[in-house]
Length: 206
Image 1 (cartoon, rainbow, N blue to C red):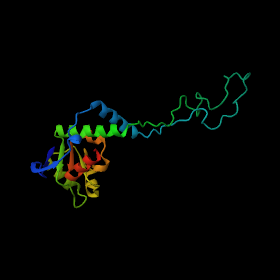
Image 2 (tube, helix red, strand yellow; image 1 turned 180 degrees about the vertical axis):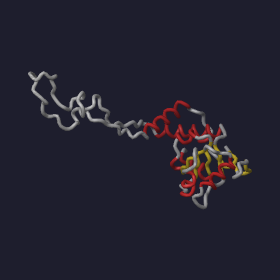
Image 3 (cartoon, rainbow, N blue to C red; image 1 turned 120 degrees about the vertical axis):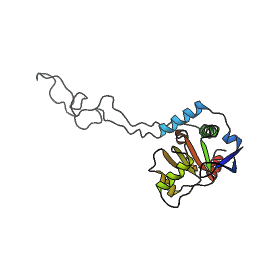
């Protein structure tokens, strides 16, 4: 299949890029995409929340007072959960939230996502995208000409100038083709790729 390139002014160009039908023209698999996106988000959770139970709190080895004869309620340790500075009942422990996703499933989900981007005309392919220096205003003007104020920018290789220019723009994210992820692809209204980047994505998803 062929996809028309877009000029810097946002108009359709006469140039086209050849794409694989097996990668950019597949059916939308909502259930699989939902599973992969959930797994990706779960993998980003730190899971470092933790509290100390009565066994982990220091001190409290001796009984505070004798069992009978004091007139006070019996107590075995000052680290009881009902005491100040005591342990926490049902204390939270560090957890690993990651979910296993087979490589074939992840690849199929990515293919389904990029195919849907093409069908919905949310994928914009430029001949090239480069910056002479880190200029946020200049990049904002380029995106405004394309009519994209909410977009993911993707180039073949990491470009430091584009990264520095885009990081202070609201609703704009930058990535190289090697590190695109399902969450970013479905989050933005438009995905702007260079011709070289989309070819690299196609090779990665073969």
